[in-house]
Image (spheres, rainbow, N blue to C red):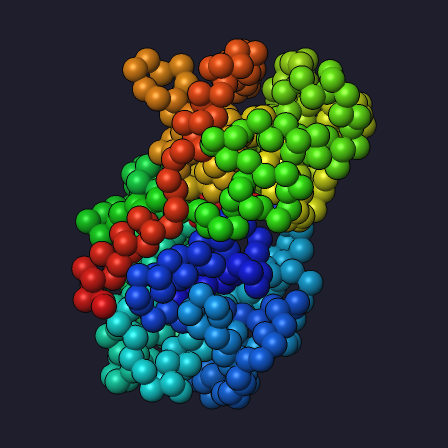
Length: 477
Ligand code: ADP
Ligand code: GLC
């Protein structure tokens, strides 16, 4: 598996959670899995075995070191160490600015993965790549390694975690990364005058999966295809959706090390202790009124994808509701400023933490009453599943994986577990939050919703088996 990020080594979002948990689930099923990723700053790899290598790029060579680390899960982690490329403050860039050499950085990751296989002299039964950063793996394979005994012809499966990121670069990168000019073609890597690494991954992989069944349908439509609906449409019979699982060890309200008190579906009462802990952590006084008032949590990248523009437009109505807000995240400076400003105006009811904070993320999942994800689009989304497990009722927009995992409590005849809205409008968002707050005021109904969510099984084992079926279908293990 070639991945741009993976827990516990490096994380900016849900892909890292998937790349940490899916290989471990496959290992539990008896498979031999290696993950290959860059050695970013802060990855210590203590005890790793180091092997130097030179990755060919035409006449030039990129020196790297492969650091091989055995993990307790049985999954082998291999870090591509090239400090001048990966030892930087961030993974992909700072703020909204990508590193200018990303085309080369991830070409190195992709080609190094194939060189690693040659070095080990072991032919894998399948190669699984993720997102644009690894899209060149099957391209290099077919252009430069077609006859190689360890690499040539190994089936490659691509998983798309987010179609909004397409790895677009000027055509001149082709020669920088040692790929022939003829790939600058509409049936290969060319996309509106640019080179797209993701398009390369789509056109050169045997199968394409994405992270929920609903998103697999949506990316074939002009509304959510981000211009790739035609490209994917040509491969529609090779596209399918497999819902992400969650790491039920890392996200377990019964044992979560970030919580002072633990709870589960049978003893949800202790959740209120976590709520107190959360209120204190956010600087609120956890008096009777504050404990009785519903807490709405958010943990998110601050981008348009996540619906922050919608929240901005609905802000007056949302803040008029009787609720406390605890928000954690960062990204687009515009939304950071928005939340800092809102918190300054409502210091008794709104808390904002800008940054990446794993401990607080767990505390919000554990202590909040509601969790808000009003995404414009959401390939899968993990936080709504963490919320379900922690008895924190999700309020979501009906899109992608959010639509697949949340059942509206007001839907007749269904066992609901949360609240959903469809129209991407402030009015629809506010109406859904109001319905959730109304349910919160009915304790018995609320507890039934909590229990329904907490009893659901979103563990990885089911999804890992689905991936094995895909690997087998393309001739893998
Ligand atoms: P995406 O990958 O699109 O950002 P997901 O819901 O799939 O969305 O996954 C986001 C993951 O990143 C979750 O594990 C979430 O808890 C975590 N996360 C997001 N922002 C932060 C943050 N500021 N601090 C800590 N964890 C965060
Ligand atoms: C992407 C998507 C998110 C998904 C995650 C893991 O970051 O935005 O919806 O859950 O990948 O697959």
